[in-house]
Length: 118
Image 1 (tube, helix red, strand yellow):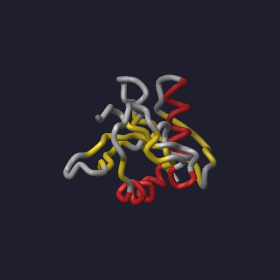
Image 2 (image 1 turned 90 degrees about the vertical axis):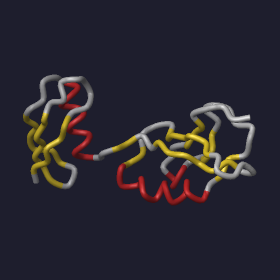
Image 3 (image 1 turned 45 degrees about the vertical axis):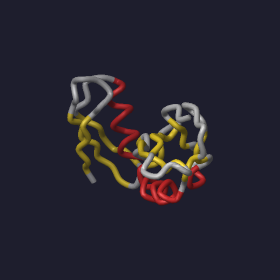
């Protein structure tokens, strides 16, 4: 299976073509640097994303707290994580980098606040 990936590591935005199957990479073409090769290989084998969203604030109707995952979450877990986040709420006061949801979906990754709320 061939997959075309746009590298986002540097401003060049190389179009990298990765060929492989079930997590095995056979060939990588189109990258301009070592970082592009590493990015495209990782994206093909196990894509991850930083999850950025909002969480309800307890006792403050219509107020939302911006949050993000402390490290990248496996792409196939994003929807499951969003279901957990949809049901969560934060108690004020909250400081930036406070853990709002620990170990979301058993990924070992925490969801943290990205701003202070009093």
